[in-house]
Image 1 (spheres, rainbow, N blue to C red):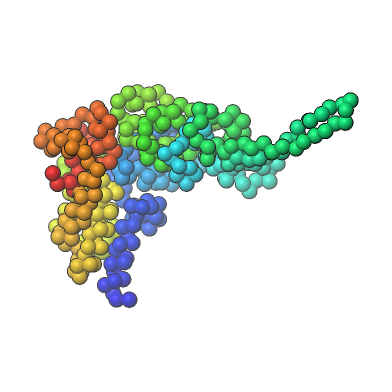
Image 2: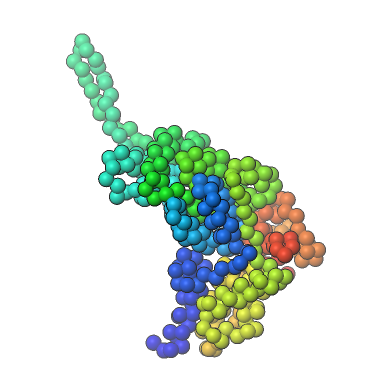
Length: 393
């Protein structure tokens, strides 16, 4: 293998963290952004109130998963608290999730935590939770005839649907499941300290109404079992009438906007440090770094993916260093992809944002432009909206 190929493979691997933030943290690529990310605030509040409930909202790619993973690590450094990171998508189809599913997932995580226990009651709780979560079939006796005739029996199989794999039912939280989880949570707390779940993946929900429903049922049931909970939710829950409802359901609410790299020098420095942490010195030219930061729009995921795409373009071009021209090729490809499916009305909205630099999300189309990261929202140093810089209008 040539030295050039080896170098480029290493640089490509260094920017694979967009797909798996935990891998980036384990590889030492995590860069803390003082005063911007909410890790410290969430961890401090959990330390003070271990059984409290929290909701973190923000656009996809804003760094919420990384925050949860780092918060989990920080919380686990507290002596009497045991934090567990949970990716809901590993259990069920998020687009079809409904009431009761999160509670079942929490029960399964507790069951896994206590799986080596020799306590007979704990073993029984684990069996009950797994049966309810995954479903089970039970044999029952059906009496066909009674005395004075000869008693006659028939054995029938009764199937109980799995809670996790049987969504879209208006069943709420299964009472038997809740009672069993409450008992197991109490025993788990005695052994490990206060249990806190950091639940990721719900930011991919299509409709914020589903999140509201889950907060009203599952978040409440998990909290009632004496367990702390931190949830990640979709950007749309921050708008319309959802915000007030969300505030009523949980103890704490957080919103993570994108980084305003154009107006906030600290945000710009943060992105620059990410490059320095993941890339060898001088591998990416200064002009290319500036372009990468600008065209990312302050979105962590886009920044990482654009950098990797630029490295790939550089390798294919035969150059040894990433230059601005390779970055612009990667940006052009991303911009074209983001414009796919844009309606004429959405294009009009985008042009209006470019012209007036103002945007008030009211309609379904407005919210979808935010969710798809076509229009970006910044909150610091001031509230503003902008069309993603990779899109050329």
